Image 1: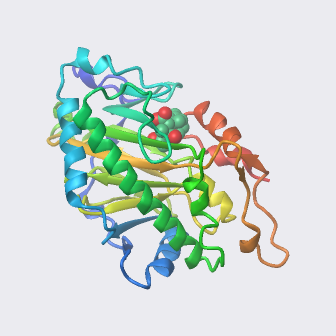
Image 2 (image 1 turned 60 degrees about the vertical axis):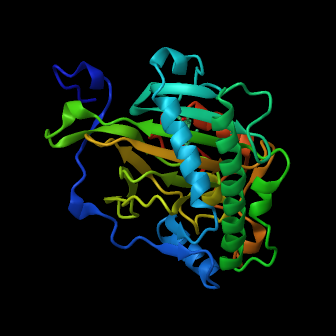
Length: 326
Ligand code: GA4
Protein backbone atom coordinates (compact mmCIF):
# COMPACT_ATOMS: atom_id res chain seq x y z
CA UNK A 1 0.00 0.00 0.00
CA UNK A 2 1.32 3.47 -0.90
CA UNK A 3 1.04 6.16 1.76
CA UNK A 4 1.86 9.79 0.95
CA UNK A 5 3.72 11.63 3.69
CA UNK A 6 1.91 14.77 4.82
CA UNK A 7 -1.53 13.77 3.56
CA UNK A 8 -3.06 12.04 6.58
CA UNK A 9 -6.56 12.17 5.05
CA UNK A 10 -5.57 9.59 2.44
CA UNK A 11 -3.47 7.41 4.76
CA UNK A 12 -4.36 3.75 4.30
CA UNK A 13 -6.14 4.40 0.99
CA UNK A 14 -4.39 2.60 -1.89
CA UNK A 15 -3.43 4.91 -4.74
CA UNK A 16 -3.85 4.38 -8.48
CA UNK A 17 -2.28 6.04 -11.48
CA UNK A 18 -4.63 8.90 -12.47
CA UNK A 19 -6.84 7.89 -15.37
CA UNK A 20 -5.44 8.87 -18.71
CA UNK A 21 -8.14 10.52 -20.89
CA UNK A 22 -6.90 8.31 -23.74
CA UNK A 23 -8.03 5.24 -21.83
CA UNK A 24 -11.76 5.88 -22.31
CA UNK A 25 -13.65 2.73 -23.25
CA UNK A 26 -14.18 3.51 -26.93
CA UNK A 27 -15.79 0.16 -27.76
CA UNK A 28 -18.40 0.27 -25.01
CA UNK A 29 -21.54 -1.62 -26.01
CA UNK A 30 -24.63 0.57 -25.78
CA UNK A 31 -27.93 -1.31 -25.71
CA UNK A 32 -31.24 0.36 -26.49
CA UNK A 33 -33.76 -1.58 -24.42
CA UNK A 34 -36.67 -0.38 -26.56
CA UNK A 35 -35.27 -2.03 -29.71
CA UNK A 36 -36.12 -5.56 -30.89
CA UNK A 37 -32.40 -6.34 -31.22
CA UNK A 38 -31.77 -5.73 -27.47
CA UNK A 39 -31.67 -9.41 -26.35
CA UNK A 40 -28.95 -10.37 -28.83
CA UNK A 41 -26.98 -7.17 -28.15
CA UNK A 42 -27.15 -7.80 -24.39
CA UNK A 43 -25.98 -11.42 -24.69
CA UNK A 44 -23.17 -10.36 -27.00
CA UNK A 45 -21.98 -7.63 -24.58
CA UNK A 46 -22.15 -10.03 -21.62
CA UNK A 47 -20.08 -12.60 -23.52
CA UNK A 48 -17.42 -10.09 -24.58
CA UNK A 49 -17.22 -7.73 -21.60
CA UNK A 50 -19.72 -8.69 -18.88
CA UNK A 51 -20.73 -5.05 -19.05
CA UNK A 52 -22.82 -2.65 -21.10
CA UNK A 53 -24.53 0.70 -21.07
CA UNK A 54 -28.33 0.64 -21.19
CA UNK A 55 -30.37 3.45 -22.74
CA UNK A 56 -34.11 3.93 -23.31
CA UNK A 57 -34.70 1.89 -20.16
CA UNK A 58 -37.99 3.58 -19.31
CA UNK A 59 -37.08 4.83 -15.81
CA UNK A 60 -38.09 8.47 -15.36
CA UNK A 61 -35.10 10.77 -14.95
CA UNK A 62 -37.05 12.55 -12.22
CA UNK A 63 -36.95 9.46 -10.03
CA UNK A 64 -33.18 9.20 -10.50
CA UNK A 65 -32.65 12.90 -9.78
CA UNK A 66 -34.88 12.84 -6.71
CA UNK A 67 -32.83 10.03 -5.21
CA UNK A 68 -29.56 11.69 -6.15
CA UNK A 69 -30.50 14.96 -4.46
CA UNK A 70 -31.74 13.19 -1.32
CA UNK A 71 -28.46 11.24 -1.22
CA UNK A 72 -26.43 14.45 -1.61
CA UNK A 73 -28.45 15.99 1.22
CA UNK A 74 -27.76 12.95 3.44
CA UNK A 75 -24.03 12.89 2.72
CA UNK A 76 -23.76 16.64 3.50
CA UNK A 77 -25.04 16.10 7.07
CA UNK A 78 -22.54 16.52 9.92
CA UNK A 79 -20.42 13.38 10.42
CA UNK A 80 -21.98 12.65 13.82
CA UNK A 81 -25.48 12.57 12.25
CA UNK A 82 -24.36 10.21 9.49
CA UNK A 83 -22.64 7.97 12.03
CA UNK A 84 -26.00 7.53 13.76
CA UNK A 85 -27.09 5.64 10.60
CA UNK A 86 -24.13 3.25 11.01
CA UNK A 87 -22.48 0.85 11.22
CA UNK A 88 -22.48 -0.42 7.64
CA UNK A 89 -22.71 -4.09 8.63
CA UNK A 90 -25.02 -5.74 8.19
CA UNK A 91 -26.72 -2.61 6.78
CA UNK A 92 -26.27 1.12 7.30
CA UNK A 93 -23.83 3.98 6.84
CA UNK A 94 -20.12 3.33 6.38
CA UNK A 95 -17.07 5.43 5.64
CA UNK A 96 -13.76 4.35 4.07
CA UNK A 97 -13.92 0.76 5.37
CA UNK A 98 -15.27 -1.71 2.83
CA UNK A 99 -16.26 -5.17 4.00
CA UNK A 100 -14.93 -6.67 7.21
CA UNK A 101 -11.44 -7.70 6.15
CA UNK A 102 -9.42 -4.50 5.97
CA UNK A 103 -10.28 -3.02 2.54
CA UNK A 104 -10.33 0.78 2.40
CA UNK A 105 -11.58 3.25 -0.19
CA UNK A 106 -12.05 6.99 -0.59
CA UNK A 107 -15.81 6.93 -0.13
CA UNK A 108 -18.75 6.93 2.22
CA UNK A 109 -21.86 4.91 1.56
CA UNK A 110 -25.18 3.49 2.62
CA UNK A 111 -25.62 -0.26 2.30
CA UNK A 112 -29.31 -1.20 2.36
CA UNK A 113 -31.30 -4.43 2.30
CA UNK A 114 -34.13 -4.71 -0.21
CA UNK A 115 -37.22 -6.62 0.80
CA UNK A 116 -39.16 -7.63 -2.32
CA UNK A 117 -39.18 -4.24 -4.14
CA UNK A 118 -38.53 -1.73 -1.34
CA UNK A 119 -36.64 -1.03 1.87
CA UNK A 120 -37.73 -3.33 4.73
CA UNK A 121 -40.40 -1.47 6.72
CA UNK A 122 -38.57 -2.36 9.97
CA UNK A 123 -35.23 -0.82 8.96
CA UNK A 124 -34.65 2.58 10.52
CA UNK A 125 -32.03 3.73 7.98
CA UNK A 126 -32.29 6.21 6.44
CA UNK A 127 -34.63 7.92 8.86
CA UNK A 128 -35.59 10.83 6.57
CA UNK A 129 -39.04 10.18 5.05
CA UNK A 130 -38.24 11.97 1.77
CA UNK A 131 -35.04 9.96 1.30
CA UNK A 132 -36.90 6.70 2.03
CA UNK A 133 -39.66 7.61 -0.43
CA UNK A 134 -37.10 8.41 -3.14
CA UNK A 135 -35.27 5.14 -2.44
CA UNK A 136 -38.46 3.08 -2.57
CA UNK A 137 -39.60 4.68 -5.83
CA UNK A 138 -36.19 4.18 -7.44
CA UNK A 139 -35.62 0.63 -6.15
CA UNK A 140 -39.00 -0.54 -7.49
CA UNK A 141 -38.15 0.93 -10.91
CA UNK A 142 -34.55 -0.32 -11.16
CA UNK A 143 -35.56 -3.79 -10.03
CA UNK A 144 -38.06 -3.93 -12.93
CA UNK A 145 -35.23 -2.96 -15.29
CA UNK A 146 -33.05 -5.75 -13.86
CA UNK A 147 -35.89 -8.25 -14.46
CA UNK A 148 -36.41 -7.03 -18.06
CA UNK A 149 -32.68 -7.22 -18.74
CA UNK A 150 -32.50 -10.76 -17.36
CA UNK A 151 -35.44 -11.79 -19.54
CA UNK A 152 -33.58 -10.32 -22.51
CA UNK A 153 -30.44 -12.21 -21.46
CA UNK A 154 -32.35 -15.51 -21.49
CA UNK A 155 -33.79 -14.71 -24.93
CA UNK A 156 -30.38 -13.68 -26.24
CA UNK A 157 -28.94 -16.97 -24.98
CA UNK A 158 -31.67 -18.85 -26.87
CA UNK A 159 -33.38 -20.16 -23.70
CA UNK A 160 -37.07 -20.86 -24.35
CA UNK A 161 -38.20 -20.20 -20.78
CA UNK A 162 -38.32 -16.37 -20.60
CA UNK A 163 -37.93 -16.18 -16.82
CA UNK A 164 -35.19 -18.84 -16.45
CA UNK A 165 -32.83 -16.17 -15.06
CA UNK A 166 -35.10 -13.31 -14.01
CA UNK A 167 -37.23 -15.50 -11.72
CA UNK A 168 -34.23 -15.80 -9.42
CA UNK A 169 -34.31 -12.09 -8.54
CA UNK A 170 -38.09 -11.69 -8.92
CA UNK A 171 -38.85 -14.61 -6.57
CA UNK A 172 -39.98 -14.18 -3.00
CA UNK A 173 -36.94 -14.40 -0.72
CA UNK A 174 -34.43 -13.21 -3.32
CA UNK A 175 -31.37 -11.57 -1.77
CA UNK A 176 -31.19 -8.03 -3.07
CA UNK A 177 -28.95 -5.22 -1.87
CA UNK A 178 -28.88 -1.54 -2.70
CA UNK A 179 -25.99 0.81 -2.11
CA UNK A 180 -25.53 4.54 -2.49
CA UNK A 181 -21.90 5.61 -2.75
CA UNK A 182 -20.44 9.08 -2.32
CA UNK A 183 -16.85 9.59 -3.46
CA UNK A 184 -15.83 13.04 -2.20
CA UNK A 185 -13.21 14.91 -4.23
CA UNK A 186 -9.72 14.00 -3.06
CA UNK A 187 -8.07 17.45 -3.18
CA UNK A 188 -4.89 16.23 -1.45
CA UNK A 189 -3.76 14.37 -4.58
CA UNK A 190 -4.56 17.06 -7.15
CA UNK A 191 -1.80 17.39 -9.72
CA UNK A 192 0.27 14.52 -8.29
CA UNK A 193 -0.38 12.10 -11.18
CA UNK A 194 -2.10 9.62 -8.92
CA UNK A 195 -5.60 9.25 -7.54
CA UNK A 196 -7.14 7.74 -4.45
CA UNK A 197 -8.85 4.39 -4.93
CA UNK A 198 -12.56 5.02 -4.45
CA UNK A 199 -13.55 1.35 -4.53
CA UNK A 200 -10.84 -1.22 -5.23
CA UNK A 201 -10.98 -3.74 -8.05
CA UNK A 202 -13.45 -6.58 -7.58
CA UNK A 203 -16.19 -8.58 -9.21
CA UNK A 204 -19.73 -8.52 -7.84
CA UNK A 205 -20.81 -11.81 -6.27
CA UNK A 206 -24.51 -11.55 -7.27
CA UNK A 207 -26.22 -12.22 -10.63
CA UNK A 208 -26.61 -8.69 -11.92
CA UNK A 209 -25.72 -5.13 -10.86
CA UNK A 210 -27.43 -2.05 -12.27
CA UNK A 211 -25.60 1.23 -11.64
CA UNK A 212 -26.51 4.85 -12.17
CA UNK A 213 -24.15 7.70 -11.36
CA UNK A 214 -24.11 11.47 -11.48
CA UNK A 215 -22.03 13.23 -14.15
CA UNK A 216 -18.66 12.48 -12.51
CA UNK A 217 -16.71 9.65 -14.06
CA UNK A 218 -14.44 7.30 -12.10
CA UNK A 219 -15.77 3.84 -12.96
CA UNK A 220 -13.24 1.65 -14.76
CA UNK A 221 -13.61 -1.90 -16.04
CA UNK A 222 -11.00 -4.50 -16.93
CA UNK A 223 -11.24 -5.87 -20.47
CA UNK A 224 -10.58 -9.59 -20.94
CA UNK A 225 -7.02 -8.67 -21.96
CA UNK A 226 -6.55 -7.25 -18.42
CA UNK A 227 -6.34 -3.67 -19.74
CA UNK A 228 -8.28 -1.12 -17.64
CA UNK A 229 -10.54 1.38 -19.40
CA UNK A 230 -12.55 4.32 -18.02
CA UNK A 231 -16.29 4.41 -18.50
CA UNK A 232 -17.47 7.93 -19.42
CA UNK A 233 -20.32 8.92 -17.11
CA UNK A 234 -23.86 9.29 -18.39
CA UNK A 235 -26.47 10.27 -15.84
CA UNK A 236 -29.36 9.27 -18.13
CA UNK A 237 -28.16 5.70 -18.63
CA UNK A 238 -27.69 2.57 -16.54
CA UNK A 239 -24.52 0.52 -16.53
CA UNK A 240 -25.08 -3.20 -16.16
CA UNK A 241 -22.51 -5.69 -14.79
CA UNK A 242 -22.56 -9.47 -14.95
CA UNK A 243 -21.86 -10.87 -11.46
CA UNK A 244 -20.03 -14.07 -10.46
CA UNK A 245 -23.26 -16.08 -10.01
CA UNK A 246 -24.44 -15.30 -13.54
CA UNK A 247 -21.03 -16.32 -14.89
CA UNK A 248 -21.57 -19.73 -13.24
CA UNK A 249 -25.21 -20.08 -14.41
CA UNK A 250 -24.00 -19.56 -17.98
CA UNK A 251 -20.95 -21.85 -17.52
CA UNK A 252 -18.73 -18.84 -18.29
CA UNK A 253 -20.52 -17.77 -21.50
CA UNK A 254 -21.17 -14.47 -19.66
CA UNK A 255 -18.13 -12.96 -17.90
CA UNK A 256 -18.24 -11.46 -14.43
CA UNK A 257 -16.52 -8.12 -15.02
CA UNK A 258 -13.71 -6.83 -12.83
CA UNK A 259 -14.28 -3.14 -12.05
CA UNK A 260 -13.11 -0.38 -9.70
CA UNK A 261 -13.68 3.32 -9.00
CA UNK A 262 -11.01 6.01 -9.04
CA UNK A 263 -11.78 9.10 -6.94
CA UNK A 264 -11.78 12.46 -8.70
CA UNK A 265 -9.54 15.21 -7.31
CA UNK A 266 -12.10 17.95 -7.96
CA UNK A 267 -15.63 16.60 -8.18
CA UNK A 268 -17.91 14.39 -6.08
CA UNK A 269 -19.19 11.19 -7.59
CA UNK A 270 -22.52 9.76 -6.44
CA UNK A 271 -23.58 6.32 -7.62
CA UNK A 272 -26.49 4.11 -6.75
CA UNK A 273 -26.37 0.42 -7.44
CA UNK A 274 -28.94 -2.34 -7.31
CA UNK A 275 -27.47 -5.83 -6.77
CA UNK A 276 -29.82 -8.65 -7.74
CA UNK A 277 -29.04 -11.91 -5.98
CA UNK A 278 -31.11 -15.08 -5.70
CA UNK A 279 -32.59 -16.68 -2.57
CA UNK A 280 -29.95 -18.03 -0.17
CA UNK A 281 -31.05 -21.60 -0.91
CA UNK A 282 -30.82 -21.18 -4.71
CA UNK A 283 -28.44 -23.68 -6.31
CA UNK A 284 -25.90 -21.92 -8.51
CA UNK A 285 -24.95 -24.24 -11.36
CA UNK A 286 -24.98 -23.94 -15.17
CA UNK A 287 -28.51 -23.98 -16.61
CA UNK A 288 -28.99 -27.38 -18.27
CA UNK A 289 -30.52 -25.63 -21.33
CA UNK A 290 -27.15 -23.97 -21.92
CA UNK A 291 -24.91 -27.03 -21.73
CA UNK A 292 -24.02 -28.32 -25.16
CA UNK A 293 -23.66 -32.05 -25.94
CA UNK A 294 -20.94 -33.39 -23.61
CA UNK A 295 -20.26 -30.00 -21.97
CA UNK A 296 -19.51 -30.27 -18.24
CA UNK A 297 -19.95 -27.63 -15.56
CA UNK A 298 -16.75 -25.69 -14.95
CA UNK A 299 -17.77 -25.27 -11.30
CA UNK A 300 -18.51 -27.28 -8.19
CA UNK A 301 -22.14 -27.05 -7.10
CA UNK A 302 -22.94 -24.48 -4.44
CA UNK A 303 -25.83 -22.40 -3.14
CA UNK A 304 -25.96 -18.61 -3.16
CA UNK A 305 -25.89 -18.73 0.66
CA UNK A 306 -22.59 -20.66 0.59
CA UNK A 307 -21.08 -18.34 -2.00
CA UNK A 308 -22.19 -15.21 -0.16
CA UNK A 309 -20.66 -16.45 3.09
CA UNK A 310 -17.35 -17.14 1.34
CA UNK A 311 -17.50 -13.74 -0.39
CA UNK A 312 -17.99 -11.84 2.86
CA UNK A 313 -14.97 -13.67 4.32
CA UNK A 314 -12.78 -12.60 1.39
CA UNK A 315 -10.81 -9.48 0.53
CA UNK A 316 -12.30 -7.22 -2.13
CA UNK A 317 -9.78 -8.05 -4.86
CA UNK A 318 -9.76 -11.83 -4.31
CA UNK A 319 -10.74 -14.15 -7.12
CA UNK A 320 -13.71 -15.57 -5.25
CA UNK A 321 -14.81 -18.03 -7.93
CA UNK A 322 -11.38 -19.69 -7.99
CA UNK A 323 -12.35 -21.82 -4.93
CA UNK A 324 -15.38 -23.13 -6.75
CA UNK A 325 -13.65 -24.22 -9.96
CA UNK A 326 -13.64 -27.92 -10.72
C1 GA4 B 1 -19.09 -6.08 -3.90
C2 GA4 B 1 -20.50 -5.80 -4.45
C3 GA4 B 1 -21.39 -5.06 -3.44
O1 GA4 B 1 -20.99 -3.70 -3.32
C4 GA4 B 1 -21.30 -5.73 -2.04
C5 GA4 B 1 -19.85 -5.62 -1.59
C6 GA4 B 1 -19.52 -6.13 -0.19
C7 GA4 B 1 -19.50 -4.98 0.82
O2 GA4 B 1 -19.21 -3.85 0.49
O3 GA4 B 1 -19.75 -5.29 1.99
C8 GA4 B 1 -18.15 -6.86 -0.30
C9 GA4 B 1 -17.87 -6.97 -1.83
C10 GA4 B 1 -19.20 -6.65 -2.48
C11 GA4 B 1 -17.36 -8.37 -2.23
C12 GA4 B 1 -16.41 -9.03 -1.19
C13 GA4 B 1 -16.70 -8.64 0.26
C14 GA4 B 1 -18.17 -8.23 0.37
C15 GA4 B 1 -16.97 -6.20 0.41
C16 GA4 B 1 -16.02 -7.34 0.54
C17 GA4 B 1 -14.74 -7.19 0.82
C18 GA4 B 1 -22.33 -5.13 -1.09
C19 GA4 B 1 -21.39 -7.21 -2.18
O4 GA4 B 1 -22.40 -7.91 -2.07
O5 GA4 B 1 -20.14 -7.75 -2.40
